[in-house]
Length: 328
Image (cartoon, rainbow, N blue to C red):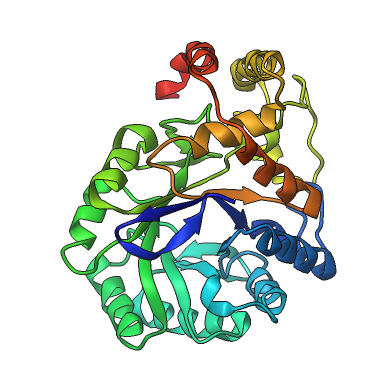
């Protein structure tokens, strides 16, 4: 395993992190990971040297956090970086943004109970909440950090201008944003408008300020695994059927690019998925890639991508394919 350092976080962070969205107990991608399998995957990741586990309360309404808490039993807690989030609440009508002070104070205690730990290493605001003044949210963050419940504070899906205002009150140690080979400065995630541009804004800011950058959806929800063809039909229990970049006419340009990237990967003797992961890892601004894996074999495949590096010649060929996606 390879590790990276950033000045805002004391510990070394594995360049591959484990995304725990898939351990929600629900079927998001047409697959459901049972508790035993989820625990096996987490432990396989830890045994491979992965030390960053990224979860959130909203993943299965607490189920993912509970599974993480069970999986880390018997491991040295001080060697594990648990990143969880706050700001997405739920009720019988569904999920909603909620960064009100009282909600954040309750969320951290609920998360600690489910994770069965005394502290969270990185606590992230999951999405902005326009209905709540950020000052109110940060009051809660300061309280829980002063109480030792949180070691580092981070943001997810926030604009740089908002981060600058936040940093006047609380230092930001990490950013989590959508980023992969074909979503370099994405304007949307599914049908959600994004208020940031990852490659153009977030990455330079993180480098300049010593903050960790944690890209999610590194394989573009599976497209960059290199196994799909146009017209793929997603099942009723697969959330990807709502992603316009993966279905319908708009998806054709992404499928075409994937085929071209796959040809380049195979020319140099590597699977497309390894190339996509390697491309992220070799970026100096990328700290740890949040890889969702539903089996020990999948996390092993992600770690295997670290065994080689993209050459200058291969980079030049890749860049020709990626150029049109700089503003998509």
